Image (tube, rainbow, N blue to C red; front, top):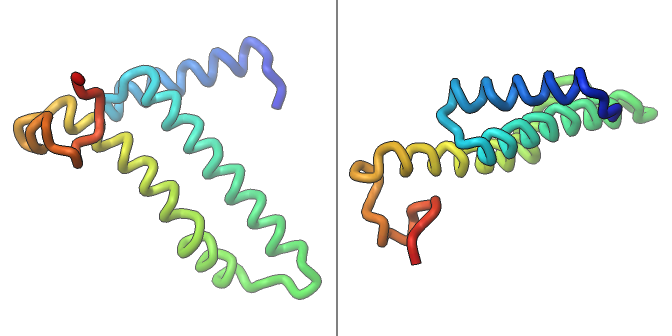
Length: 108
């Protein structure tokens, strides 16, 4: 991955867009950006793996594999980020600060 200034500017714009569209704090937006990038790269890797086998799997099998074994993990991680935003923005609707199921910055 080439790290030039234009790429850094583009990444910064994408992170700022995530902050605006999803209500993420800067660190949360950075995590979301990296998760999205990792999700995209893994999908490409699996496409290459499935297509490159001597007996290539049909695209439906490859899609089923990704849907069953890869995507749920990314959905869970994105859901944790989204829950942080919801707890921060609507704490009265999502439990008390003492609730152990609440994810977010909690005072000690």
